Image 1: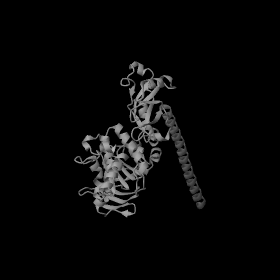
Image 2 (image 1 turned 135 degrees about the horizontal axis):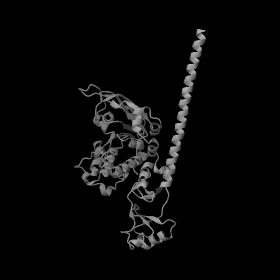
Image 3 (image 1 turned 120 degrees about the vertical axis):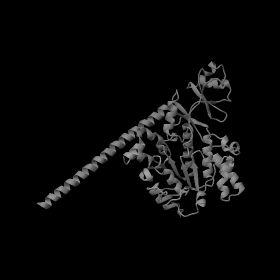
Image 4 (image 1 turned 90 degrees about the vertical axis):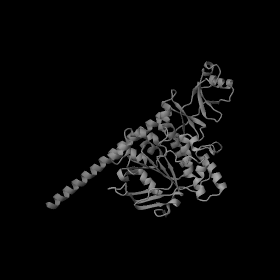
Length: 414
């Protein structure tokens, strides 16, 4: 694990405005926002509301018309924009990698620009690849066209973090990949943030993604006017108005499954064997074990197949034809919603949990997940009752104040 020397820096946006020539109204109008050091803040809102423009003004890819930007203790509004961008990581949709450069050259780009030594850059490239779960020996010399979409996005994040910036800006970085890969990339970002504690500002149009990733969410109206800026829990349980409720949508209680991680629930052990174990040993485990099933792992300790009693007999002793391939796994940083979706698509009602390189760590089953769903629903019911009582008390107090005012007025007239 690479040693990190820089953690996140606070960001302050003060009256930030962007007007384009010929437009009657600003694209972004008077945005003021305080972002704490080391937190993930999500900007979410309808298409065209100005969320990407707001993000790009932080590193001045788009120059603000007026207002101030502070990062840490430094006012960066008038700083040389090229120098500013070298201090702020930036990751975009479809990774934005330079196709004529290798993976290593892409990651080394900013450290080279800021004058790092060749040896330091070489070590940093290897650290960054390892950090995002890619084997440096395998990926160092590849070109972007030789990578999957998910691998390209991992390299894009590695490049954004290579010079150890305190701030990382992410503009819909996972929007162009398939849903399964997107879930895994989101989990990877959560894991990275646990280790790095950067300040991350992340733009998305997907409210479920915002709930899953954000420490706080800014729901933006037109021209980036802030409708609500709060924690995911607060927005789910107490949206400020109908506009915010529209983003939350139906099923707020189930959306709260995006707030609990697999690491927060019980992960059970499960009988395992590896493809290198003798067939007789695997057969004995299936025959003599308390469970009629085991999980077969590959040579890298990754989930490979679910094997049941009788599979080896039916397949005439061949592992190649025996069992059912593992299609879905979740990481410890996956949400309970991810785990529930995986479990619901599995006939036996369980999903294997994996580590950062895909290695097996345990299993989560339907019973565990359903217990947590019931706990969340119960908590929501209690919150709703408490909120209703608070509103009733506020109305009662208002009625008493009005009555006291009426009585005072009568007394004065008498």
